[in-house]
Amino acid sequence: MAEKAKFFTYKGLPLVRMGKQLYFGNMYDQYVIWMEILETKQEGGIDVATKVRIRKMATDASLPPTEAIVKTKEVGSLFSALDYACAWLKVS
Image (cartoon, rainbow, N blue to C red; front, top):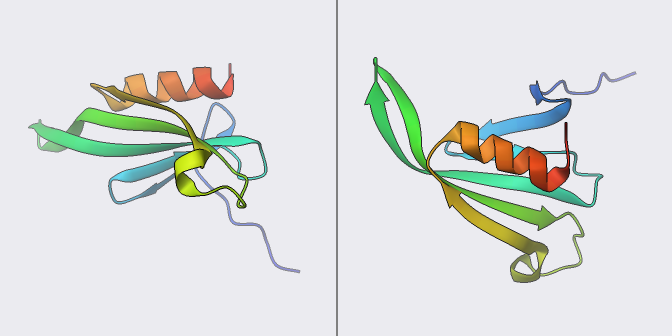
């Protein structure tokens, strides 16, 4: 029997990164969060996000992408983006 893929989690929900895009939440829930890192700066030899766009998206595959996005916001850090993501998905 095949094992389920294990994802990194934050506050109990999967957090998956692909390049400068992150997805937070379960695809079988009504909504997930799509985060896009728009700008970074170097701090101590590490790239740190300084501008992140957050989108709350419906997981209903029958919706066109423009209708699936129900909320959008830009923030100044990945930490802030994760705070909003948790609030939008009501994760404690």
